[in-house]
Length: 264
Image: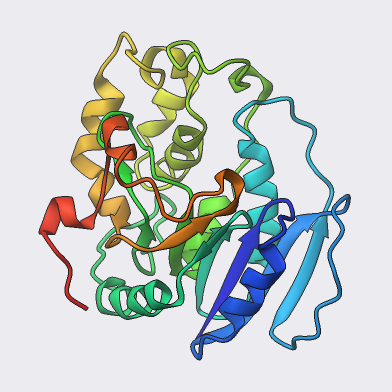
């Protein structure tokens, strides 16, 4: 059994998505973690729970602090051994959820990583895609793993003011997912702290020092595991599929790129 955390502001499909996921036989509960300013309709479903949090103060264009808060508040309310964090503006197809459940169960325990505090990581964390162009950059649409590890992933400080994104000039500003990824990599590899402390030298596009990118290439597929391609609807952009035809041009790669076609 697992718990699903749907995080972010309310969209017109968020409630129906929660109900959709609640029909899965392996789902214990679905937690909608949203904001105290959002209206949420009453849901007569014993599997669905709603958490409302105050938005953190942030003028950051990347909205990473919003994701950290809404994700972590939802994760704190989970009780199952396994947790899935997804976004409130997307709906993953039930067939894909069933496939992922089987895929994760087959592959979650093949990890030997140890956190810097000496505790062995409980299992792998799975993501839709990783990036080979930008260091420590998981795609943030989905995180699936043991609760202990997903808890650590989001139990991090909010992004500080000095890292605020004021434009999409990523030669000057660090991409938002790099902050989330690097903060987790740092819990395993302490040397990543140097890259975060000096992010303008290491973690922006075309950074003057390649060390972070080179280090990320060596370890990224140990820290996050990419999943086979899935079907989803992206309400925010009115897309009926994940943009697998476009994201690779930005450096994103998937299970099929590493291992070939997946057979469930």
